[in-house]
Length: 344
Image (cartoon, rainbow, N blue to C red; front, side, top):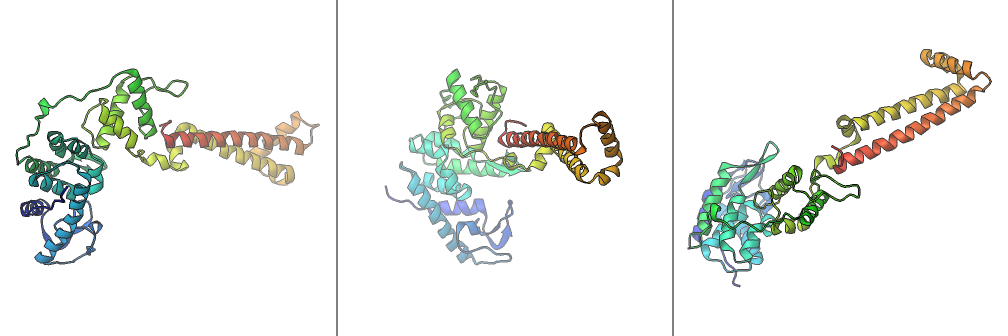
């Protein structure tokens, strides 16, 4: 298939959507940018603070950046495109990146010759991160509508949302259980009840539907809480979810999980008890000056007058050591459970 290039009309449309600024500026996500959306990540030149370029240089940089985008589209798209379709895809990929496009449902539908289905996917890419949450942005939504209209301008019609074919969904217990297990393995830990053998209940309950919805949102799938082939395919290829809790230090877990904090306090208490008892076995004078400890030791001696002090002191150390080991084990398992998501 002949490699395509962006048309003059396509370049003009991209410049209008991105803007063309000849002085370096910081974009909405804090990245130094210049020209038509050029950043250092796209290649040379490296953008520096207060950097200035001419209009001719901006056009030259855009040509270089578009060449990389064009190469990606020419490589991964396996079906014929008209010029408007190609220009619209260049505008999209210039904005979202080649890696995201290469893994997208849009590309999958396009290569299946479902041009209408691919056109409907433009509006999926309208989200950005605001205060740590993925939300639809009006500016991106407007841009995606323009790109969609450009894609459709040579005669391909988008299917109205209300008339789109409902994907074949799966609701049988086996399919649901498979999805629950895969979601859990990917880090979506609240997916339903688990049986004693570790398997899942296979029921489309509230938690399972919520996990499916979040997974679909995070992996560029049509929104919803249903199981279809796209979801099953994505669950096989999507990377594991990375959460802050996965690397949570023990100190943070102690604040969040009561039993971990209790085990930690018990461990510290055991260490203090063992330390005092050990010191008492060898430095009776030191113990004598510890008011509370001294009273406790005298009481024990009254009940066990015939037992040498070093013996019962040793017993206290042994018990404290046992408590320490049990508490430490409990703390470690609690931290592991929190990091894996089994304990929230």
